[in-house]
Image (cartoon, rainbow, N blue to C red):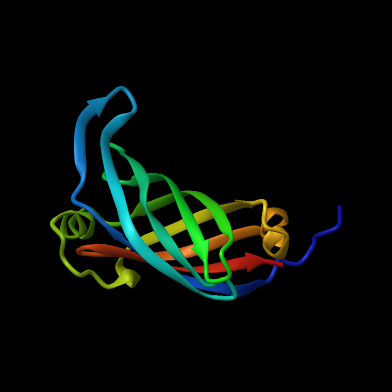
Length: 154
């Protein structure tokens, strides 16, 4: 069996999302649920866009404190295209670090694992290539926002 080399990553963009305080529906059979409204933000890099207010992050918190994200946002590019962006992600780490993040503290991202797998969808011909690539990102949770560095898997 042939072993293939690992794919390379190339920088796509940095993205910052501003968010509201979470809505807390409570524990369900899936885990503790949180819904966080995205109020705005921006993407800068190979794609330059503003985040249209109104997206959501539907979070499931597992028993061990690990957060599973399910996010849907809309991007409006500087050249007037609309790009839908969804991603699933995971944020985990030592319990005391997760508690500090939950309390709104500014925690060094080297202390926890925060990765996502963005998927883009657009009808804009100039951004059609986004429909045909895989992406990964690394995130950092700050008190009132979330920042990501997004990479294209080559």
